[in-house]
Length: 70
Image (cartoon, rainbow, N blue to C red; front, side):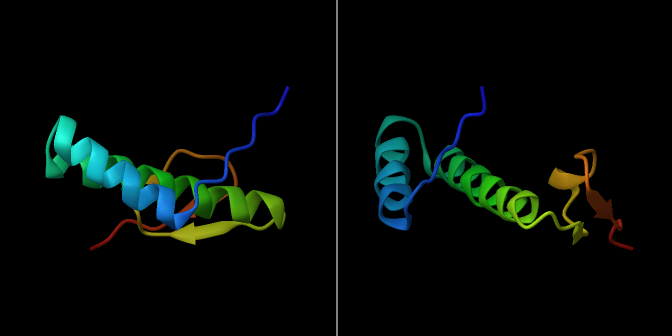
C-alpha cells in the first residue's frame, strides 16, 4: 500500500517552531529540509521524470541522475 504525505508550508513552519522548542535549530532545519527533499522526489516520480541534481541526498535514489559538485 502506497502512503502519501503532503506537508503544507504553514505546517512546515509549525514543525520547525516545535522542533526548535523541543530540540534545537539545527535539528529543526534538518527535518524541514527532509520534507522539501521528499516533495522534490515525489513530484519527479508523479511526472514520471528523471531528477537531475548535484544534491548528494538524492544520490542513490532510483530515477535520479546525480552529478557530484566539483
